[in-house]
Amino acid sequence: MIASSPADVRTPIAAQQPLPTLRLVFLLLGGLSLLAGLNAALLLLDLPAPLTGARLSEMHGELMVFGFLGTVISLERAVAARRWWAYLAPATLGLGALSLLSVLPVAVGQTLIVLGLAVLNLTYVALWQRARADEVAIQALGAVLGLGAAMLLLGGVGFPQTMPWLVGFVALTIGGERVELARVGSPDPRLRQAATYLSVGVALSAGLALTLPQTGVRVFAVLTLALVGVLVTFDVARKTIRMTGLPRFSAACILTGYFWLALAATTWLWAGPLLEGPGYDLVTHSVFLGFALSMVMGHAPIIFPAVVRRPIPYHWSMWAAFILLQVSLFARLVLGDLREVPWTWQVGGALNVAAIVVFLLVTVTRAVKR
Image (cartoon, rainbow, N blue to C red; front, top):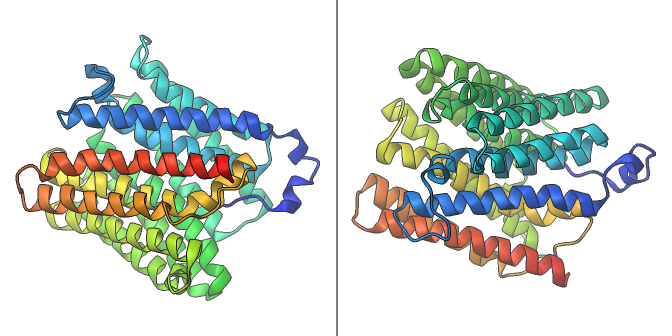
């Protein structure tokens, strides 16, 4: 998720891109998917929710991963690629996710998601032609896993069985970005080499996890842990955490995100495939809330302005959403799933939703007030 530079905006190709107002429409699709996913989360927690329906609960994972994260990732990549057709990715991903909740057959929405991820893969081809860099290759591997997961779901494979593919999609996309940023502060070639080799291993082991679950999931976990170790070792966040303001806030989000991804991988390494129950809840929400959402919070004040051309100034209130997310995740995953303390799973889940809502409110408010 690398923002376009000011020089990019002045290029003739950039003039062919959708205006920031139209980009807001794509971003709105991702936001609606996020809100629908949060509504579904409340239903799964057996808590009151604005909307009800069995189909809404069933689509929770696809709404969050493809509808929200996929749309936001592909939108940012389209801005970086400076190709009008790249915006078909966030459009079809957002519309596909929302179609899952309509009267249309589920296969219609899943097909749109597959098409959106196919366009995202083509976007990485364009980015690779511009700069054949390791970080682009790593993110492209993530997009391949995302497309593979969407195709498996369309083919009838259960969501839990595709988890290594989905985790790889998110982890390699964000990991590739962190490799590029780490190169700014540490040009050590060992970073690029190790991260690239491990990313290839993560992608291959995701396929192994589908055919030989007991072995493949554990291999995937080991390689993911190794990738986290490499990223943490070289990440510039280890230096910026000592600063103040936005650099410290972003660094705290990033380093905490690494912790949650490592926790999920460690759980897989210890327990093997997890398709239901507390262990499954721990892995999925460690990755998609603890890792992915923490990273989104840390990057939002930097990435979103490049997408919508509107500044989101840092404010201390951003810490409120971050701290609430981490505390509620600890209550839900550590006390609820691991220790099985009564009531903590449900309360922690409800506070997870509240943390994301607070993050949205703070971000929108800061963008409006500048």
